[in-house]
Image 1: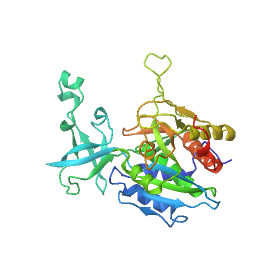
Image 2: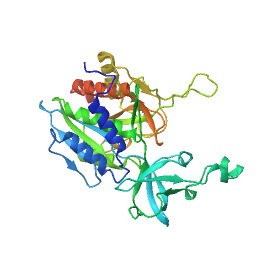
Image 3: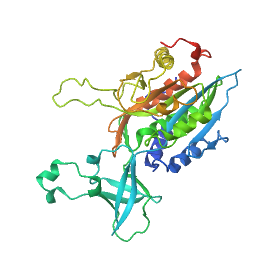
Image 4: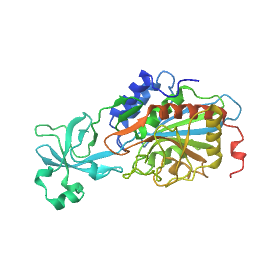
Length: 355
């Protein structure tokens, strides 16, 4: 079996390239181009649909193969420039779910040329006690690129300017949700199993309402679907050093298989398949505890006459902030679990009892 714990240089370089790319909802072109560059030697037939989804089909060679959709979203959370206040100061709106408390002082890049800037707010020396108690409202924040540049205009996107790093068994970077999933999907495309029609969707606008996945699933009309994402890990110690009883998944415990989230009840047949495969292949895994949030599965499973779906995610701390942290072992084991699962899907899986 291939090494399922550490990254080689090529995988590290790909993750860094994906993390550095700016690809906010509705403007995912930088990531889409990276994917096309990575797969061009073995994929020449693809479709970019009206919303910007990158759609690829790799036909199976067996008789009447199952149509299996794999999806990972290309977009990230960030900002959209709303108005020019002059002197290099810009008002902005939030794109996706971001906690405003995280923003003051963060370095950003803006627009197609990745113009550097910073999110500005009054420093603590100049604020009152009451101001320091309250969250700074969005309309009091500005992106500051300094005077003398005409490269930024309303409508441009902006995102965090975070350095990608390998630190021991971890990786740190922005937009690991869901550039980790994108990188997994690229790996799976290299080894498409002959027993399936593999329908691969690199989707858009997940962070603003699962819009791309809805369109992609309608186009493909698959028999079943696997969604590959990155899920927030609530696994830090609690303040009084007692046991954390509210964790949903943990870094370093393997891929997280969803049973339920805020938008999907995963198909039990697919959950069993993933768990059985993990046990047979001796691949660590964990159950992502039911709770809020959601993935592209929330849109996919409701298309056409219903599409059995399940999500498999790589745990990541500090999601939707300037820097996330994930374990290299979880990334590699997610690839291993999905590769083994795709190769072992029984033709009659959907005839099995739902229980």
